[in-house]
Length: 459
Image (cartoon, rainbow, N blue to C red; front, side, top):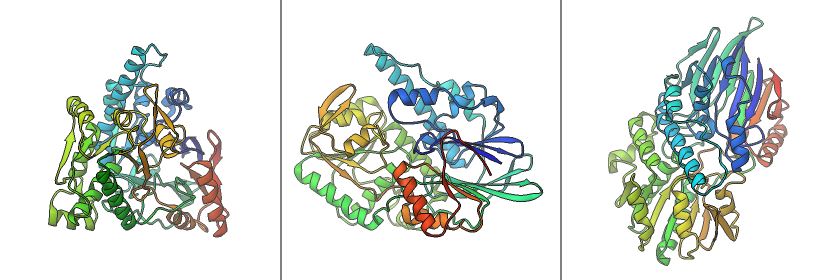
């Protein structure tokens, strides 16, 4: 088996890992790179491998940095299958169309500004073509994806439908097991089941996003969130929350539900201004089988976990624009999570210069994104090409992160100390990768390495 990482190697976006297994070429994930506009455009437009040589694609989950380049495969002629879980297929059907719309809107806007731009990476037809290639496999079902190559999806606990990908094959008459962790979720999160606990594998490709730090407990996060809401309400301001439409938004709404049930926050309006988030929340309702016992108990007592006393799910543009004239305190959730596109840009532009307001960051912000610049509290931020003073308060809560923290990653990687030939680290910035590698080595793991982009590894 040979493995080459073409994305999310010494970085956290653009996940693409090409494996040659028993004479078959299997691509794990095909995500969009997110970062500086020109660099992202260059990386996303040209694929570093021949699409026509691909036999199979295996998709770990629906986040755009893992799935967003799949329509590019269709555009370049890919006609093979894409294996994923049923929930991931349902999510991709709406998320990839949304990605196509965003690219089209961006191109039109740049054209109106007389700025140079590249045409969209793909359009709706490319999305429809690639969706015809999807094959859904439930968790724990062993399935042959190529002659002599079998795949089992295991619960990753990261987002709805997310999976660890366990591949079994024969090499030199020996049975081999390769595990791609995808993005590993956290234990005891409020909506999904806990991640599967693996036993052994011959080679492992695992994520490292938070390899250098742990998250605060969920209970502490609820307390801190309540404090932020109360403080902003007391100032008469708005709480602006950039959210990832998948999982983070639903976790945040459910956190507000818990606080409302305990009367820990004031009764104020909540606006979910993201058609994508609205659609994804509907998919959550369709896949309640993925929910853990805690949220089921809440559902029995209080009904729909994504309904609040005063919540409005906004789809149309007119209702979104009306929020610009809102004067009373409110909570506004909007995509995208790293503030690189979408309606959140309008809300940030209209509210970042008011000291009464609070910008609440609840997700990882990659380098060179507007979200990272907000986290760094830069005195000015550029939105739609115009600089605005950042006078609003900025708060960061990592308690809602859907990624495993350092302790869980160390425990996960240490399981392969004696059984695996290689444990290869991906999906992390340098600091996190090096910290996780050092931590595993301190625990006696001598088989740990950091994947380099484009470097072929023999397993």
